[in-house]
Length: 254
Image (cartoon, rainbow, N blue to C red):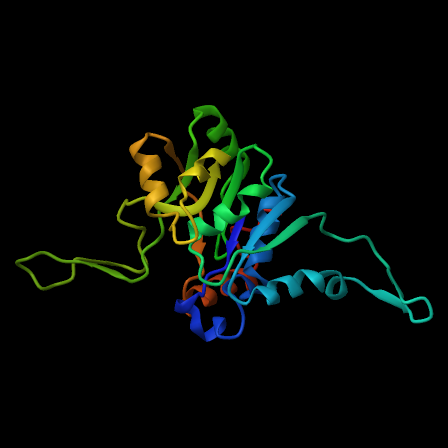
């Protein structure tokens, strides 16, 4: 399940025209990159929870074969023949979960499409080289309702090391590793029962439900020390595109 309905206001240079999951890395949207990464770990069925500019996401998948494959149209029979096997075997459900629905509310609206098994949930704006297979095995082993992937992002600014007595810079490191704090990387494995903690459309998943899971001892962290990067700002888009264009994209696991 991929949450793809937010307004993406911090990337307004792009999202005034398209929803953030369609902002491109290389020639394909970040949503495609996320799905390719997940498919490399055996996931082929997706529920995309749409909201803001949902029609554009639906149109992207509607036109997917048309962009990717050569085609012959027979106007006499109103038929189309595609000339090579389709690269993807995805089954994608595009669910309009409302323009102003919060993250928890989007999950709740999609709950009826689940089959009772644990499922992966993530957001349509972050990539990483997370071992989804290992993450899933970890979740099944501990038996709790929810697993969250914990990541340590690198610093965004150069760090200077100073002492109180001496104004001279003792050390400088450009974009150092983080300060040791673990944050949510947005890749969850959830039991469907975890969604019972969501009241309705106004529920923010990251507030009430996650706090309730924590208080009940039902939220376990899977530590991912490898690469993870969000696409929150234009700078993030530039960084990710630079990696992709140089052939050095750590999230390319396919």
